[in-house]
Length: 210
Ligand code: ADP
Ligand code: MG
Ligand code: MG
Image (cartoon, rainbow, N blue to C red; front, side, top):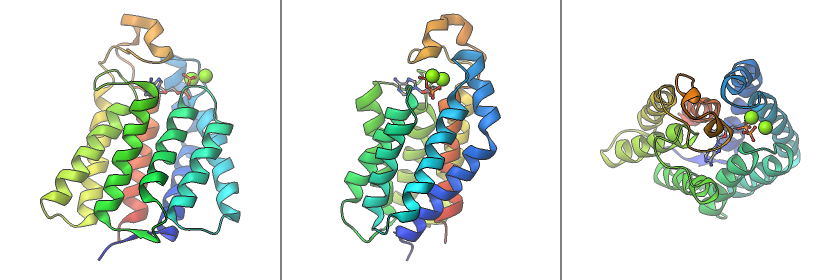
């Protein structure tokens, strides 16, 4: 049956780094509309540093995820650095020292990451943040696995839910982060962090499917 081992985690993070790299302008333009126009460059700098750090880290999933989180905290800055950093550090804590994660363990790790984002940033559903893409993805993954779906199908369902959650941020009024300073003027713009978070889930579906 499907397992997420160190190689799969590497594939996922490598693919995410690539996708962030090819969406730098989109992420930055979205942030220009309701923030300070740095989300794409922030995350691209961070994921390039992660790729470098993982090239030399020969280790199990938990160590790769911890290295990712620590690297993002130290290189990304802003709001998203600590949030994405905490996401991966909490995933690492959940993965512990396992050589591989089965689908339920991967879903639990993703959920732990989401809980880390909430612990750090206090976002709730509808605040127009990365939470609004990540939370529906975790819910969809859990529900699909609980109903007996294959890991591939469950990951696809998570990605569809993340994309829908990202799209749903457009009409939201921002209540967290820089975009919240705009009040009503934040309405009508897709959230940059929800956009990058949907890429994170989409790349998981591509990299971890069997
Ligand atoms: P900064 O706002 O410091 O420039 P970025 O532009 O890199 O940081 O990231 C902005 C994104 O961070 C937002 O689009 C939003 O999704 C996310 N974000 C901001 N504050 C929070 C929060 N408290 N909880 C969850 N996500 C947040
Ligand atoms: Mg910004
Ligand atoms: Mg900034």
